[in-house]
Length: 499
Image (cartoon, rainbow, N blue to C red; front, top):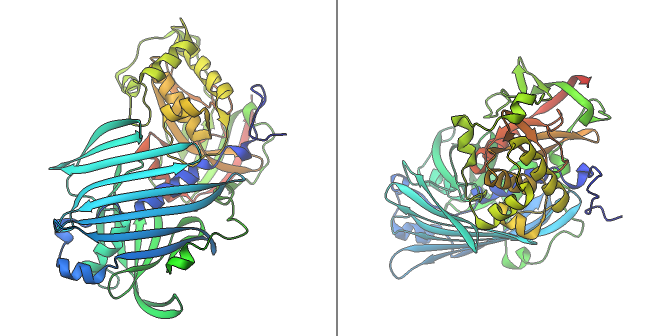
């Protein structure tokens, strides 16, 4: 049996679909970690001669997951004749998700001004069938971006209060700022894969002696708190990053070029989807038959999650999810309230205004005018026509429509684009869902058909079953809010009610 090809009338096994979202979050965290930008003028307190002395022209690091090598990083720092600087960085990783091991390649180039302020960048991600690119430059008080697949880039602008950082440089900036032990500072960072701008808190910890390349080195330790997710780095006395640790047992460490390019661990890393999932205290035999579920949730304090609203009620640490009852009046409604009309607009990754998306949406819905009928047709078409296969990428609707392959993220982004193109407001929701005794990270949709209803194109469910626990809603930067939840949330099912 080919586990990645499913009959359109059978419910696919979740173990092959769910949880890819956490891998994408890991990629986001890795991208945030890498050097795309550098320090602002405010933090630029060292001379270019000092910079040259501090930073090696070339460096290599291995990437590990629980001590097993899964990739490597090659960095170059160039001094241009103009007096500007250029950084080049290439990352190769072998990642296992939902039983499938894939190679991932990241390539970044950044141009820096003589004062080390950010000028421009380019970023490319590729794995199997999928690619994602981002290009950008700072113009006065805004960041001009072009994102998407190389053949169909979408332009956008982000207003800036200050020039942002990427957290690889955050540690260097904190080092340069001369933070005392126990002191901290907040920086603004930009993530090209989600076009998100967020604050990151970096704290100087106690100095530590660590082994690096066969010798013991005294280091300054810095830890960065990003959306509740904690990364730490150890820097040499010259300010070079020697080691880092992060989520899900991930770490990086400086090595020689020969060691970095020697290959990966023979027995590949643990499955990221599995280790990020949460165990359930009860077995739920038929989630799609439930009309209500109540779950005690711990570990969500100070996290930016959307637990309250719509079909979800969150009170005193207990989340209750009730299955929507789609009224007959709602099914006939075609008028859109102002807050729903906003979700008809295209975005860099949900290209609902593109000719190919609009053409496909028209083919699917035909002459239908009822928004609920349109939603059912589109969700069913995506369910039947998109091969359910784990991929590692930043999903965008055009590539999914072209390749007709993907996991829950690809299903959700294409469904949102087709719904919007058909005149149905649509959002992307992300969170957890139950399957086979565990809760896995997942993505699905909500659509406005007279009222907001959940829809899952992976399972062909309208509404989605009540074990879909929404933690975040939105595209791109909104999904960064889930980073702080990984490894912190604990669930206890209190009660379930059947239809």
